[in-house]
Image (tube, rainbow over the protein chains, first blue to last red):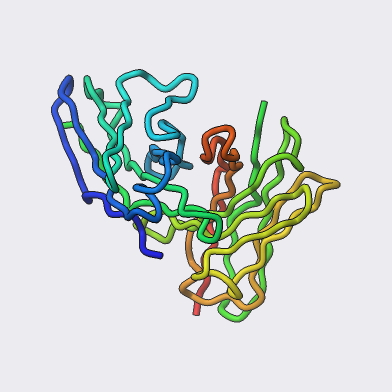
Length: 111
Length: 121
């Protein structure tokens, strides 16, 4: 099963918003509410920032907002801060056989 | 405090075998799935496979089936990823991650620090 499709890059100035899309199929993103997002700094392990499409783990700022429409999930970071500059990966449940699929990843740059 | 601590970096030659580990603490090891995730240099995350230490139920991404073996030792709360014969294309960072089930939102909530495996041809 192919990786979910994300734009390679996204950028915004401090204080602005940036939205990253994650496109799959009806067998993964479109079929379930189990979409999660991970933030990864260079040389570091990924960190969970959104799960079940829009829920935030404890400690994740409410500037991070997740949503989904059809086969596409989105992560919006509002009030961009320098510390948000990182790679972001979506991930979706893909059924009992395939378990889970990651997205291709998006590098967010704060201008 | 939940912790996943992985074994150190490895430098191996093609054809050699390798087993890397992920030692967990701070939670019930047998109550959560543990996944392995590959990240090749400059590339994205790939879900390799997952094990439920409670009963050793193991699932593999078809792309990795037969290429690696995932196992776990309940007595020391440790999961493993092993190769019988490494290839240069196995050069990557490998992460273990605790997986929360459907009732907790189906996600990887804790990650190991990663283990860099370098294979020379």
